Image (cartoon, rainbow, N blue to C red; front, top):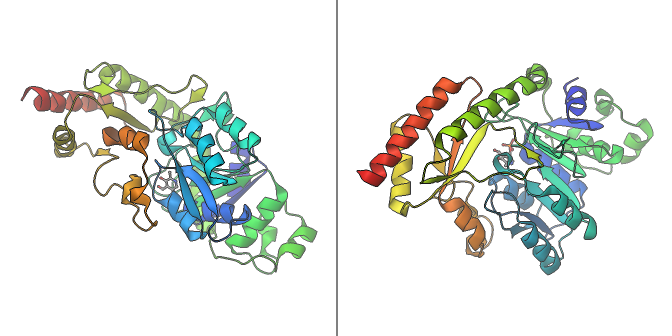
Length: 352
Ligand SMILES: Cc1ncc(COP(=O)(O)O)c(C=O)c1O
């Protein structure tokens, strides 16, 4: 029932519950036909789970630069497609930031890429009125505890393609005739594929599905709360001389459950101190491009030479990028408090 309802929510034909978004991406890569040593294009600015899924599938990530607004840099994407010859794009909407999807799709079509969307941070996020997760062959969502749809752990793989859905069910681990429990499967196709595909035991449990069902209907309401809080907070801090909140493309509508901004005019030491003082004030923020942050590609030492790849634009875009989570139980009163704390901390750092 959860799978059917999530598919209806997204507007796709099939949704498969799995045990994590990492598993969904791994399965998506297997379905895309990734072989050991193949190259997969992906954002340099993403969470370590994404290159980990590529690594898990035995492939090698080709990192694409991010733009000032933390989306994929489409000019660099095309350059890397041509240079690497890679045929698969696994693109994250990191913190719900959306690149120019029209331009991405033009590159995907021109070079005939298999496009997998990582929508872990992109619930109810749209481009020109179409929800993200509807552009690729496969979209992957996370229901891990910090995500908008949360069950502690979990993931969802979405597609319009019956054969992809059938293969995903089998890769996730479906033996005998248990595929019957998923909606819309074709018995002949399942019988034919059943023993061709290994089962990696990445299923979602029924209890997890039950936890998630009522949350789907609440997403719209939560989206409105987030948008209202985000707009209000932006009006309070957006004009600060040491803060720059990059603006999304006009066609993009964000979920707004987190806010990111660049700190400007601060030294490295001051920016690091900003994090320490904000945490002392009770606001758990982070800067992406600092030591041990799992979203800084230079930290992913498990990839041979990842830290040695030269991606100056991505480094520039994460170095002073502050990440702030906005929970849906907060309102404008709390946004006032957050704004006051940010103003006070910056005032202290600049003026002493
Ligand atoms: C951008 C992004 N993609 C994928 C994932 C992986 O999600 P999961 O923890 O469900 O595997 C995460 C996890 O936080 C993420 O931040």
